[in-house]
Amino acid sequence: MAVLVEKIGEVRLAISGNGWEILITRKKQHKRANKSYARTVGDYQVFHNGTKVAALSGMLAERQGPGDNTQSGVTNHRRIAAGTYELSTHDGASNDKYQTIGYSTDPGLKARPRPCFRFLGTGARSGILLHPGAGYLYSIGCFNPGTTLGSADDNLKWGDSRTRVIALLDDMKQFLGNQFPTSNNRKIPNAHAVVEGEPT
Image 1: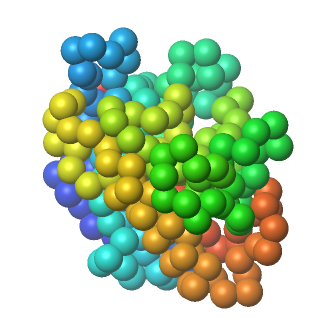
Image 2: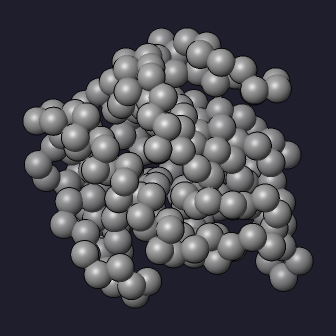
Image 3: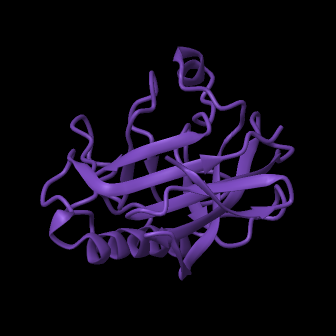
């Protein structure tokens, strides 16, 4: 059960206060002139049993709204619906692009597999990940962390984005200890993402 922990403007920030949680608060959409689609930007903040972890916060980019977990969301490459999601380790069986356990230690953009974790319970949407990004957006439905995304001209920076994903994974592993899975494609106990907001 999510609870109200604070309020910024009219956006309610709701987490359960139990376990490892990442709160994603969507703020706005913007579109670059040479792109055919908008992107959604917002903030993220990690909590340990309801207490903020100051070092684990930043911004996120994802595809345009509205949030949609149906087949229409798949077809139109929309962001997922606001809600609470369990998390999982990930290993794409059909490709080597993204992997939670066993990702490449090479920091280069072309090195694979790249670090990630997966959102569960996303309806018709499959493979919804939080993974590194670069440029305007590096996704057709996933979350890319970054630093400053105040306008459509601001870019995700690969090294910063990758470092942020790894920091989230390392913190999750440390906080959860032996509860964290030792293999991929396994639910991560006591770990959730709360996605708030549907900006237009």
